[in-house]
Length: 241
Image (cartoon, rainbow, N blue to C red; front, side):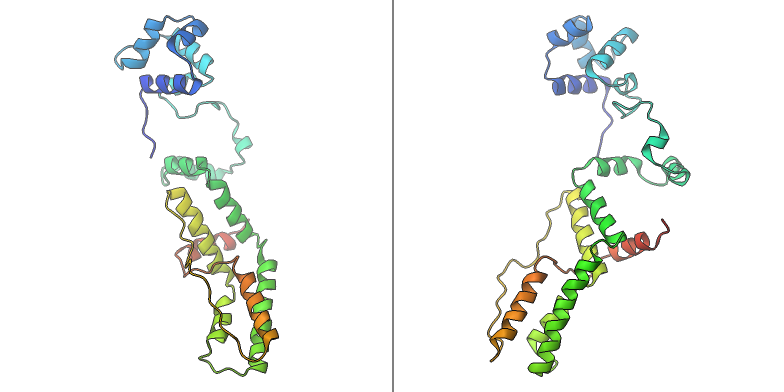
């Protein structure tokens, strides 16, 4: 959570980011080092208009940022059309119905771009073909097992192949859930780390090899349980674009 900084805190942080001492700032801004020290340490001290302009120019931020009127440091007059926001989005952002501060923090996080990329892959169905190919491989092995081995419904390998079938919505719910965990600072659970033990599959070594090959393909897609994100992803996929 972001906490609104005071003017002295902003000035100290800006100088620390610049790696400068008071003498450096004084030389560049033509302000005295004693005045700068007062501005950085006394919240009751009024900062002159000339000093605000000089410091904003030196640190490359807006005067409003130094005065605590905004959190926008470098883009005070950005045109709305450059942000590609429509009227409906602008109305929502101005309404106060969503937490704009939290939204900004999420967008500034290193993991946000990954989240958006995964949502695009899901909504635009970019991975659907690859998932269909993997499912076709699973189904082919399952058909071969049913035809050649005639297992009953309790057969562990038949059940494994059923579970290995990828349900796209469930898979992307798991992916987006992990992305949100990264944004929230939580460790991503990688699932069962134990080795997968596959015993002999009977008299047909070729079938066993097919089975193992299929499992190897599935290792890249970890299936989770049903998350609340199913609804979120369904809304995204169903929304007109």
